[in-house]
Length: 66
Picture 1 (cartoon, helix red, strand yellow):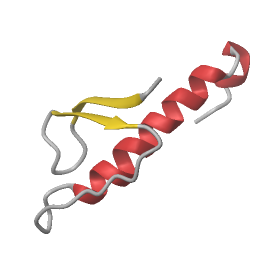
Picture 2 (cartoon, helix red, strand yellow; picture 1 turned 180 degrees about the vertical axis):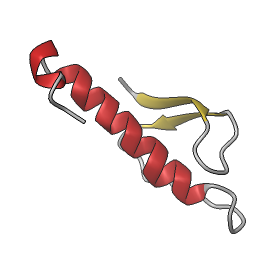
Picture 3 (spheres, helix red, strand yellow; picture 1 turned 90 degrees about the vertical axis):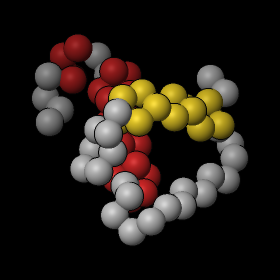
Picture 4 (cartoon, helix red, strand yellow; picture 1 turned 30 degrees about the horizontal axis):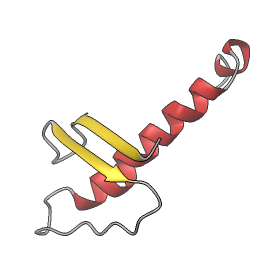
């Protein structure tokens, strides 16, 4: 996998955002105050990391994850 795809992000001020980020690169997110930068950087990417982590577990172990 050479990139990270975000499709339909709708966290806080984000409204159905689609984004492709290259892996192993330094990424900068800029924008006006309240435009959703932190929501994208923290909430959306964290949720995706959690989803991938749970998918990597066995079905039994995943049943105990929040």
